[in-house]
Length: 164
Image 1 (spheres, rainbow, N blue to C red):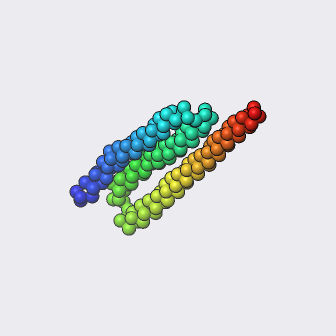
Image 2: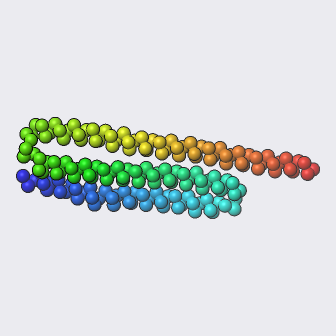
Image 3: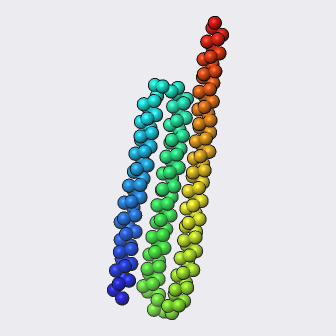
């Protein structure tokens, strides 16, 4: 009987210690990537017009915010998993005396499958929505940048011809 308790304790230890560290490292890598793009955009400032620079920074900011939001929401949903595991632990610890193991196994299996399906559906829908929103904003931003460059070239050619 000592084996499952040690296994459950090590599982809780991994959930509370390892996963937040891993997610914080993952989030920090995205912050570094975003700062690199911000530095590059400021470096290219002398070669681009202000509107192009604005769209460049704006598109990468929207990508960064959508990634940050999906990571934050996954951490937030993961906290619900921890609460759910705590309820399962309490249930297994105290109520298994009053219920036969067959009913207990079926009860846990049904609620665990429902919870996992809800979690996966909500996480995947948030993930897909955030990247779809980012794709739409980025494509609109690149389109406006392209139009800005095209209009500036057209205006410069038109002004040079009209001055002749």
